[in-house]
View 1 (cartoon, rainbow, N blue to C red):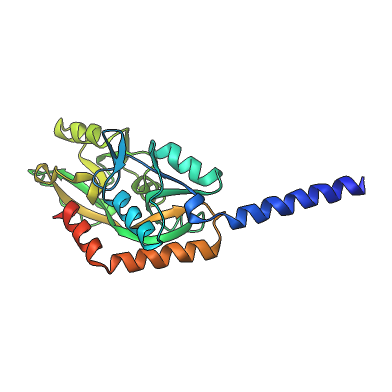
View 2 (view 1 turned 60 degrees about the vertical axis):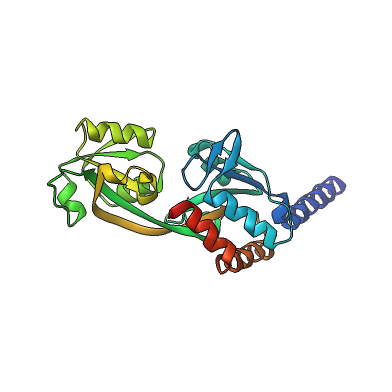
Length: 239
């Protein structure tokens, strides 16, 4: 009996040693369809964050890792429950902060209420929107923010940004709650009416990552953000 317990303890220690020894190059990197940060083009993961990740690995003198593009809910569940995983671009909210390890920032995320360009609504606080219908992407950071803010408006769940746009255009909702980046290419059709929050987009790591490897990634990210290559990359996607 004692021998068996010692054997199990030895196996456990070996497994823990393996966990702590996993390097950045050995992690699994996940992302979602979120233009212009991360998306599929001809079957390949591309976008600002994907290219930023490649610059980080070049700084580390390593080859860029494969990035798997999956639905957000699947990627987030994987990050929570599977060791050695990374999910980006993930908004670092107070509710998420202690669940994962973080390397920041990729960019800044601003959550806002948007209306049609001819909207006459005036919103200076969440209370002003309580009697309105609001389209919202379930599972996103902005959903978590509103559900934790005692916000009593009627929230209409949608599966895509395009569905939210359609509901607003048909005037079936009064507002859409989205991050600023979600409106890329559609800014002329909508206008911001109220800013809900401002948070960083980050690389979120499952907590199995060692602090040494996390610091290695963060240092490389900071060095890249100060480089000419980063400036050119930013201009490529946001100007």
